Length: 466
Image 1 (cartoon, rainbow, N blue to C red):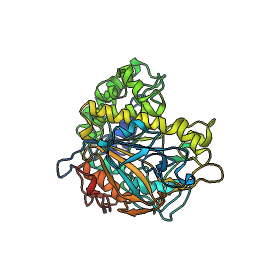
Image 2: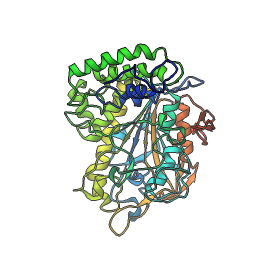
Image 3: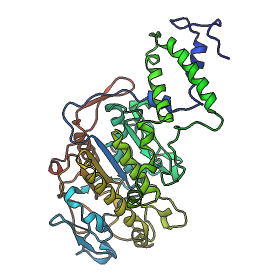
């Protein structure tokens, strides 16, 4: 039992250090959410109006098959162009693959960048570059792990440092799975806040929003905590809240009650918790995105940015051991069957649903949507009818807040194997994202040792901006 009168080493108001630690660990049924919220509070303001209030990143880990989607080459040899044709779009001179017909009708709202270059053919290290804007040391290191010297902060971590939390929600959320090697066991480098410190890590949600029983992790009481027990704990926290108001010697204590109340708000209801309640969406909207894990994850991302979250990254969620390549984009075998059977049709549905939904709600002009991956795929098929990793050139698409629709940046060669003109590097893509959020590349953030770092060393892609 807690006893605030017992002897022991005391803090500046007379409370013992042991009791302070015990109070700090009470929480609500052992929830970690208050700690998460409290650790992510620091923010700074942008210095100019931002065309985008929020960003949704759709990250197709495993690679975008650019030959069959955003950069088809209908005049290339069959061994390069593949089995599928190209179709016209609403953008003059822009062809896309026939497997994304819904996207073809939306290119007037999109900018396609056809000359992304990482020079790296390994998932985790090319991915590190796309997430942070910095090349991994060394390049081409498969299954690389986080840590120095490769501890640059991700886009998610920097946004967490620059933007404030809103209504109990963090500035940056990643869902529904980690970006990781070995099916989620070993996170890629560059997925967190790195040298900025753990307090700026995004909120990682490993979840399945398509599950009818879905609830945000950490937002509900554990089974062993009854309502009566919750009430008692809240009463105890209130009593100590009065003492915490008088504590000035510890910088963290001044905000303790504030973050605890944010966590309570998420449990008890309110705007933050409502953002996760997909049952509030009409069936026609849920069906429009598709009742898949990926579709409902992207719908949840839309709800989160509506609730005020600055950045939501949706990592490709589908994993099915019964399918070639685990059902994912890493199509080393049976490439054509995979992209036709379940990859591009799902992506086409989800991406078009998001763009149209945001547009109909009047949110597209203030929401930047990025369709990206760690690399593309090889120009030629391998002996197993697959395409391998290719970081020498690939395509991405941006739409919405700050982006001039109907634009094409860069040209690849006739095989979509190398850039011919206007090469873009990951740092440039990220500099453009920051620009749309109202932060120029030279904006400074400080690491855990107080050293200054620019948020990007890239150049904004001016040709695709409004």
